[in-house]
Length: 117
Length: 118
Image (tube, rainbow over all chains, first blue to last red; front, side, top):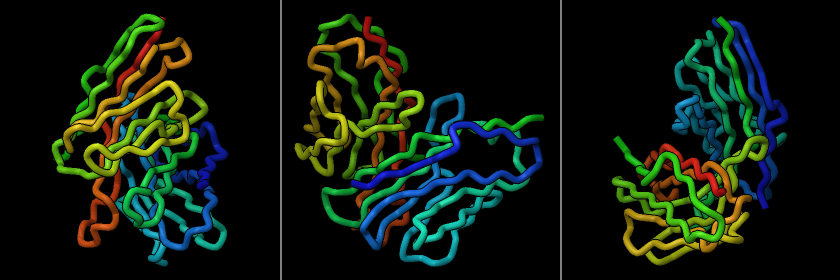
């Protein structure tokens, strides 16, 4: 079974600084999807960024980027120029490869990120 | 915008009651999921469904059942609620990633139901 590990339960950083959240996973598959989700105090889970394992290029979305190291099974999230609205719980998630009926998302335990004014 | 709607935001039930949590999505997604979220444990999958009337057990199915009679609706049932089922429950839906031309393989979530069993 796939597992996703987030080793940082809590982090805090000053506004405008850069912060990196770590995530490692374990799988024997070669083609899969990885995601970072954000859950603010409103509880609504929001997709931050997506990475497809067969793509070598790291995904970026504005201030958010990932460092995807497939061999090391590592998928870290970098938030640049952090803003107060980035305060949230962040979850790393793994999706099985395309295989009808076997596409569950497996989540890590989350990192609570606080941006300090 | 994709919308995943859960029937209740907060719910309080008594031990032994049969509890229904409803989830409806409006994006014609084939996949639907039920998770529970507990502090320090992240999101754990209870059940998922990849088509009408199809269901698969997740990691923690004990004490739960599900129903998917229509594509847009996925219900989670607590047959006899117990205090250890007090938790946040999240519903999600997605397209199957086997649909190659679609970019949106991510799951979209409802706003969550905080269930308290007393």
